[in-house]
Image (cartoon, rainbow, N blue to C red; front, side):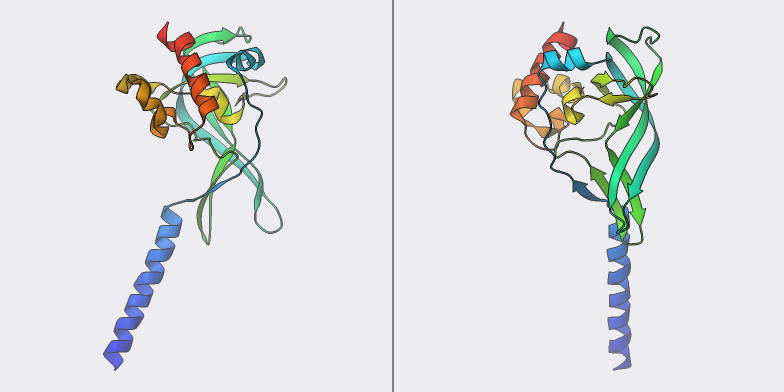
Length: 199
């Protein structure tokens, strides 16, 4: 009987350790379903301070503020990006090779109950290393960072699309780097590709 109790105790212990190990190693993703203004390509261009092709160098910092119940209500992540190409520049001091700070509206955090990621949009996927992005960025006067216009609407990567060289690949979320299928985004994706990449 003692052996049975010992085996059951060991199994329970292993289960508890595995459960908490999983909760801390695989972030639970929380996405907010907010309504965003839909931007045409022309509106993205008019709103932009700069339009660039850039790549992520490093995630710099995360700011996150919790309410009294430990629920995040204000959050953002800042990243440094290196400019690879400039398409539109209303900030004449910038040049190719410069680094700029960009804010993304998501945050990662960990507490006793596990690891979490919160993202301000159903569509947005945070910037990744080893990828180039065409970004429509706005800088509010007096701020040191740029913001991607329309959350996911001002961010395009063509790495997977060019690699597949196939129009049908637009149906794949991995090609688009968005979380859910979005016909409006796909239309802008084609327009941005034709104007800024295909040339």
